[in-house]
Length: 368
Image (cartoon, rainbow, N blue to C red; front, side, top):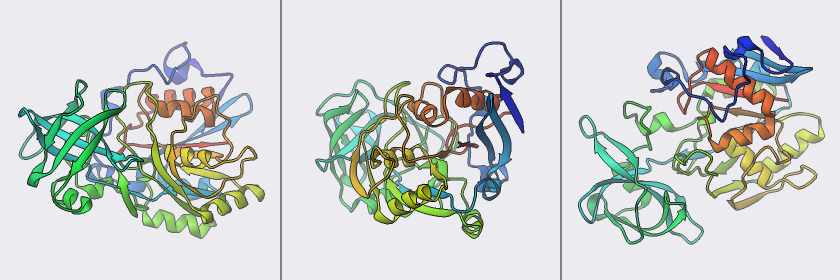
């Protein structure tokens, strides 16, 4: 364990300037290019940096995710997203013959689909790579396998996400099982089955991308947490694609916080216990349904809440999360929970200590 007093010491970042988590260069070797199982370790054996505020600074502790039961306390409530990941990327060809991929990013309130259109580039075998398609226009038609079609109707998120009329020959889940692939970005060098992108809590299909903060949980770890008296509380938020430009806010997403989870969160706070959100999705959902007094209520629908340092966190005490790229909107949410000094110290330490980034990487636990 190390304590950082009076800000970030020179030795923490390798320089005298304060580390800025919004503006840093992520070394390529710190990108997790494959699941931890492919690296010879279990899901719950990834590294975990535990960060707490301390008098005069920040306290950082290096752990493994399997240590979580010894870090949390009986009565703590851990709020987990039970959304399951879709094989949401579908190969296709535009009406003028250009190879494309359509990434489903979630249903919209009007019943259409938000999609991200991407250029498709051939890879080894039947694999393919994709890149952003930023000059799409209304009316573009994409021909999908078995006669499926997706037609862009209107932009819903800058020039990246479009409302689309989707016509498929089979029910969605059947069609995606046949033709869809997990959304994959360039730092993941090989294709992995959809099972690699599911958490142990996955139950209700709907996420374009995995609620990845929960990926390090294993069934055995959940059993140990429950045996210790830690309470697991579920909710649903279907995650959209997470490839926005730097500083671009998150899109609206559908969520559901049930009455039982609301009761567990409120009871924990009344008894002086902590509520630990697993992932930024949990923070977004709980803060959406939190009143001014911090009490949460059951609700489902769409949330467009954007959380930054100016937001007064009411429902969440701590956060399990991954490591986010410089400029990502998630970093603003992290600062709202941990504060600028803690996040800066954590990110400097993670880089110095060679933590791994992205959905298959290591974890970060922020505690009060």
